[in-house]
Image (cartoon, rainbow, N blue to C red; front, side, top):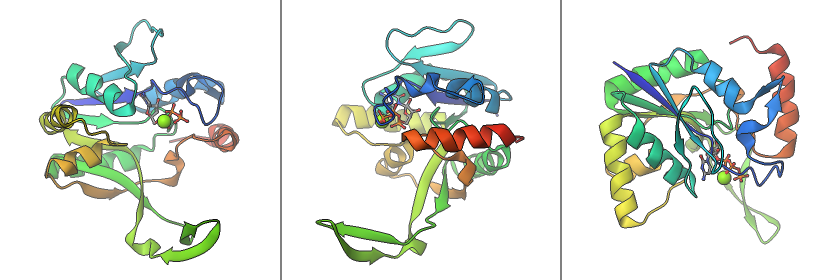
Length: 210
Ligand code: CTP
Ligand code: MG
């Protein structure tokens, strides 16, 4: 089954504040280069780039104003039967987790990597310690998320028509009424989001061997 990997890389990296995250470097490589290497095995890779950026030798689409709009453009350009959508902000791609995900996608049509919540989870109530939420019933969502391309394309088209914006693709597909299976992810696939995450990423880059 042909697999297309879709890399939304068009974010502006506001929380880090050093320009588009895809082009920040850890371990001598940009986050985009890390992700491209992690998916070098894929039949097709498509990248959504920030406005004004071009890259030769890559299949690219223009990014949108939101992640969902960027992924819309990516799915539209994809040709694989299965698509894996992966945030370029997650440079460390753990092959074994991706294999688990692909197996679930082939079996069910839609799956997401998730990890358990390691800390106590509490509701903030005006700066005070509020109700504790049962962390065993919650998961942190990672990428890649995988789908049959037709299913994800249908979800994106309908969400756009309805004017609804989601922060990931599993929400879109669930909104369409299709179940999304949870697959164990890997903490090394964390998202580089805040400045200190770059320090963690730099450390992991030094010992990376997946
Ligand atoms: N993304 C995208 N197009 C957008 C917004 C986000 O392709 N219009 C991508 C980012 O490049 C990233 C992924 O979606 O790979 C997850 O987004 P996030 O971590 O929020 O990155 P940024 O939006 O760049 O960061 P920030 O929210 O801090 O500005
Ligand atoms: Mg963002």
